[in-house]
Image (cartoon, rainbow, N blue to C red; front, top):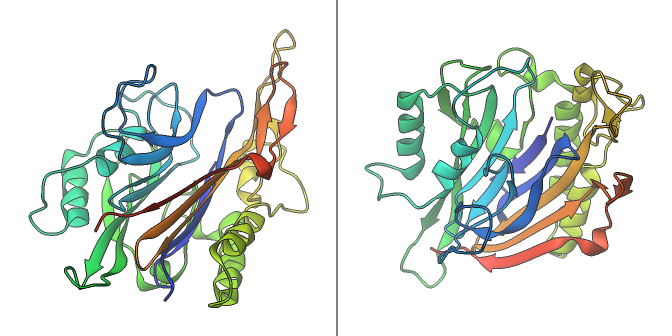
Length: 306
């Protein structure tokens, strides 16, 4: 049960993005690092062009950015579990990994190929962002992003893709609902978009990127008045305090579900990028709940390749 908010139209920033990853706290996960989706284990990758955390079971990721600027955010659709031969994480890695020069635009090519292949996946929503430089060859080229939303509307469904609307480019949100079936009415999405719009309105030339990042992290802490008690209520809150879902065995430790990570990505019009990942809830060695400390955040600064 993840959520993300973004803007592609701010005059100072080509991309402003913040996201929570909600997951079982026991699921093995590697923190954000540079890699190229090689085998998990000993460090054998020669060229590391992608920054993301990684799911250590399937090897994929839920949110990542390449040194070339390609960015992807994946959320699962809330549904009954099913069996599918392909992992949704491939949807992110196939976009972020280097690809041949496109015949038209990189994003249009990838959208067309994904729709044509129509591989059966469990339900997903996918935000894809592709960089575009204006004035290449000039002293100060300017960065913008093309954006697309890709989904199968539920497990095994046909994959469809579309460009982001003007409204979504200004400020958009994505969670675990089904497009066209009330996804934009989820309280966590509606409240998040309102808060995100307020943050955008507060940005001035004097507000530095770390202050902006802090405002976005604060947005991601919003909680509903009544904490969720079952899966169907997770749509009501952005921050999910750990809870147990479903039947738990008295003979095993509780399997807690909650907000594991928060991430903020800021990309300036000149390509300068700030990526910050914070642990929110974790399990210690004794399987006890531990609240993350912002002092131990993972911050990366780099410049996108034009």
